[in-house]
Image 1 (cartoon, rainbow, N blue to C red):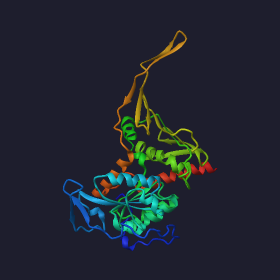
Image 2 (spheres, rainbow, N blue to C red):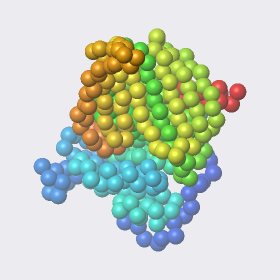
Image 3 (cartoon, helix red, strand yellow):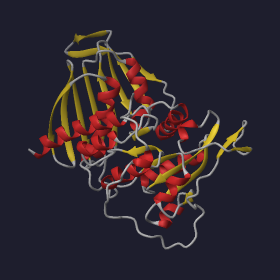
Length: 366
């Protein structure tokens, strides 16, 4: 099974910790924390039929049912999750909770007075709070039997992530929010390459005030660590060496015989999201922001004439079906819940990513 041993959610004990969320100053809320009956439709979202289905474990929802979803944390990531959920056909009501009520209300979702009330109302939840608080809230969601998508990194350390993974019952979907895994450029390149000679990722950002508590490795480079480890070279062992600082880092890894170079920066003047791959007869460059893939085929002729180098290439611009990766990710999450199957980015993969990040960070600190 993809998850840890089964547990009765009512028997899970949440370790005590200092409460970080204040009592709301707003006296009235549309979200009462009362568990609702499941809503189903024939063909259209606006023609509901109510059935008295027990939602204590929402994986029992049959195909075609609408699911109520929640977002805890309404910062940049949480706002985008709420926006996407609100537009998906399979979603009934979208709920949100944040310590700042005005920020929560700005999402347009139904505001809850507490995260406990939100967890009583929903079948699925996205956890998009600052990293130090993700594991605690994930434990609460698991104890409530709510399918959970946790923003990366899911925990502050691999040890904390191991403990979290042990709490997850087999019939609960818990995944890690690594949106770049769902970028169509990655899908296209994965299907193009076999036994690549060289791979490089470049992920550079200007400084962002919203990022606190994470190094550039877990903030940015983790996306590419995930793609390399679980998409391009699944199951391969790797060696890795790194240098840099908490804001600018470079790592050279080897997967099998293939060298993989990873660079990440929070000090750039230009935002960059590139993947570069060399295979036997082609060089492939993918832009993860513009969702464009360019293939440079091996030169037909290459030589020197009259003191000048001469080279003829065939350059192919691949047609990519451009979509918002977050929409694909959240649709995939809801589909996994409906079908009772693991989300593609599992907690075990999230744990493996964290371990690699920690190895890189040890090199940065040396």
